[in-house]
Image 1 (tube, rainbow, N blue to C red):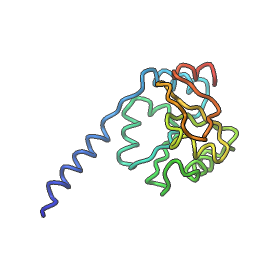
Image 2: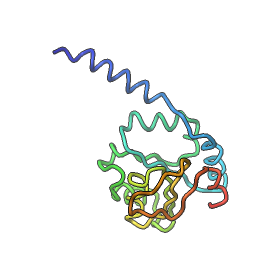
Image 3: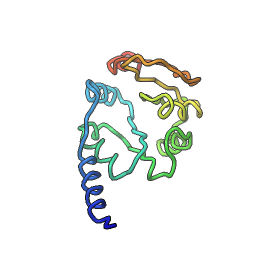
Image 4: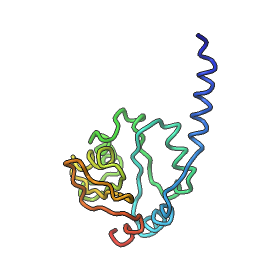
Amino acid sequence: MDYTNYEIANRLFQEGLSKSSALIEGAEDVIKYLYQKGYKLYVVTNGLVKLQKPRIINTGIGKFISDIIVSEEIGVSKPDPQIFRILLERIKLKSEEVVMIGDSIKKDLKGAKDIEIRTIWYNPDNKINDTNIIPNYKIGDLEDLKNML
C-alpha cells in the first residue's frame, strides 16, 4: 500500500489545523483585562507543539500569553500533575499563587487540584459534575473572571 497520499493528506490537515483558531466569545476581552491588571497568563495544553502553539498565537491572544506549555514538548499530558509541576518550575511560583481555569474537570482541573493549585471550572453549559473532583470555583461566563480575579 502506498502511504504517500495519506502522509500528504495528514501533513496538509495538520498544517491547516495549526492555522485555524477560534476563541470562546468574550475570551479575548477577558484575557486582555487580566493581562492589563498585571496577571501573567499561561496556557497548558495537550497535543503537538507544531499544532497548538500556532493555533494559540493566531487567535490574537498570543501577545498576552507569557508561555505555552504543550504536552508533546515535556512528555506528559494533562491531567498528569507533572505538567503543572513543570509549569510552576518554569514560572517560579508556588501552587497557592496560581489559578487553573479550564472547561474539563477530568483533564484541566484534576492534575492542578492534585498539587493544590486552585481551580475554576468554566462550565457555560451547566454540566453536572459526575466526578469526585471538586473545583474551587465554577463560572458559567468568562466575564465572571473579572469580578473574581
